Amino acid sequence: MGLIQFDFSGAVDADYGVTEAQIADLAPKLLDLRQQIVDVAPPFASLPRELLDGYTELRDDSPLGQIFRVANRLHDEVDAVVVLAGGGAYRGTQALRDACCDPYHNELSRGGRGSKPRMYFTGNDLDNDASSALLHRLGRDLTAIDPVVRRWAMVVIDPAGETRERALALRQFLPAMEESLAADVAQWLPELLLPVTDQPSKLRDLAQAIGCKEIFPIPAAIDERFNVLSAAGVLPAAMLGLDCVQLLEGAAAMDEHFKTAPPETNLVLQYVAIHHLLQTQRGIDRRVMNVWGSALETFGLWHDQLLADSGNQMLPLTTVSPRDGHHLDPANLQGKVVNHLIVHQHRADPWQVGQSDGDHDGLNALSDRKLPDLMTEAIADTDAAMHAAGCPTTQLRMREIDTHTLGQLFQMLMLATTVESQLQRDASI
Image (cartoon, rainbow, N blue to C red):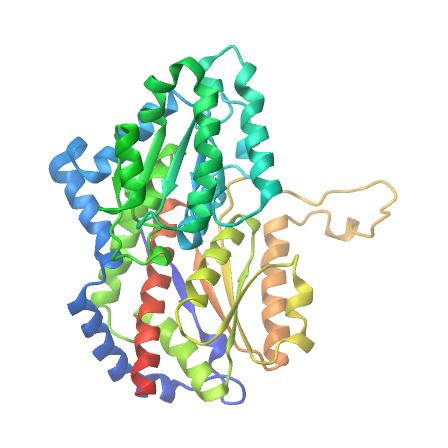
């Protein structure tokens, strides 16, 4: 499978962007930083290949084999999963579901979901009403005849086991799970509570006291913003039936590309060069991830979290076009770089505008046009308007939304954030 594409031509402009000469001048420094990072081997970067190699060698006895074994078992045992997580773990896992599953996955019948569970996310805030509503929703199925429909599992993601919001959520949801299991609590609670944590941790202590059958490792050395390709993201993704091998293969392919490709074709180094130069040479400190398609909106929010805590001193913002056009009005573009995230192939058959009796909306002139074609035109028009307003843009292009491509995208942006953070630290010394 090919790599995603990064087109930064919309940011190369002597009047409002960067120049090819500036990019070339920065290349030696980026190569030095790449070597430093490769030598250090950040745990998040090498993890996808380690998980894949372990699975090839040990199969069911490997960490990835453990994930698959549990996920496959739960398809037959529960109809819902609650993911208690926070920060990057929350957004990364949710991004996988929102990008790869039917937009109304949780509303489909069990048959319509292929027996995959509904999935809900909580544990990252102190929202009393949202937590109460989710508990009420889970309780609605307790009168079902089918015991599988009555049962739900809970994935608790907390590397150190000390995050206050998750601990408080667990105090709400663990008693609710025990109550839902009633007389079967001793049998099912150790099967349905699935901790993802480091060793030692308070969460692991609780899990061992309960007698949990499976505890999934997540090294505390991996910052929570970077753990989407660990058990924190892969376990829920596997529960949804997503192709997690391809997710990790995509990430591993991007890691190898980062290590070996020269600066002029290296997606990670190109991405860093453009944004670092725009910030240092043009004072552009607001970065917009402009997503053309709602399936990737949560991915954009994950990216916001990744950048906001990176120390890179910029303001991230996710928008969905054309829905959020007011944010991208030419009058509001000063100090921004807009990164378009574009998907070229769609899952559903293209929808045609068609004829309407009376032409009340004046769209009959477009009757033979299809929605994807109109989207392509809107992207070009938006980009042109931004350039006319002096706003630099880039395009991240995905052939389609699949787990391999998402693995690439996650890994690319985590590596880029790491490189740029080190670049800014070196510049400040």
